[in-house]
Length: 506
Image (cartoon, rainbow, N blue to C red; front, side, top):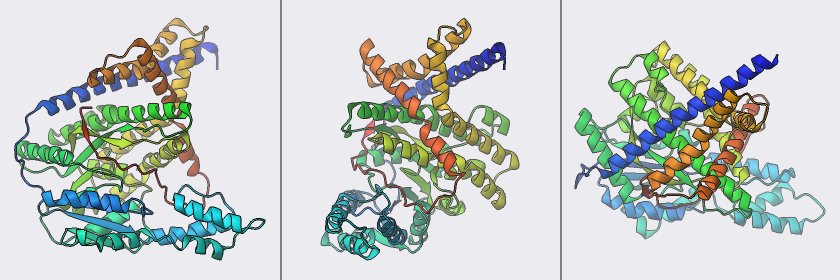
């Protein structure tokens, strides 16, 4: 390739990155304005009652069950007709056997171990110095630690839970979270179709304020459209507690949490809005695709699905690795709008680089599974061929944007500082970096009511730039995973950080 064509290619890349960040800045501004506007709208003093069936799928959550159940026990009495279903799974017993095999084979101890289990295995190591513990010895070391199903049964047997609408069901299969949720919903007692199935993780702590805000959003939707929304999504901003022992790692994870928050504000919430408008105003497929509204990307946490809608769609997808974005694909092709609650809650972000990369690796499976989503929708006759293809292309585009985020940022940074870069290309690269790093820092600070100094802006911008630099590592590993055979894996277990899901202005 000659110098001129190469210059044209990198110049086009810089312009494309600048255009994407400009679009993101525009959407961020609109989202922040919308959230502040909604926060100022007077709410009904007594919004209508909404029946909610909370579903809590759990796997290896022995340490967190007590706190979670205690939280919902205080919450449920104020929600007439609502229930909580804790669904455990036989997969936990299956994975314990797999874990024992791995440990007895001398493989590295996985992060799925609790501190108490790790301590028991350390004592076993001390007792078997000079040789590898046998499978029987490893099994005996882990035997005193009950499975989650046992812990749930013990907690619910306490007098404090008698008479409360709390159920424990057990999924006798090895499917993942989606299969657990589907099983739990199938065992719910008969009830109105307008009741909601609300899916949360074990570290979720929905507050009364959050529920009130959600119910108010549902009431507004019913007043405007004549029915309660089929799907409601609670979105989140991400934060860290700085638990890493390394200052640089704490800083990078802080920047990554900010970048994930920007994804919520620039991509997730606007996509819900565009998809809903496309459905209600019957925009053509081409217009919706050009506007980026041909694909709603739900998140499998804080997701409320009307019970009749849940049944119509056959529950959460079980044919993909994860269930959240694939569920959004099915909503899209079936032209089912998503009502996004106009407020954010706080969610925990990874606290170390290993967890950060692992999260990206796991989440990117959503994008790699869009082909399976398209095939399933076609097999079931959902949506038109054009709608399915449009949603598939948008999903692949978003996945490609994430996968190339790091190299695109690095190229723009190199073009901006390299002295032999042509003037127009240098300007395009500088604009791309400014819109991607400096502009969002200023926008978020203004929305927070802060006036950061130049030094503070520089620090926050550098953290965001570092997050861009690491962003594509997890997705790249996820792509490699699809091209190599792998042994059966233990289900990932994120660091649990239970905290009230407080509403925030952003």
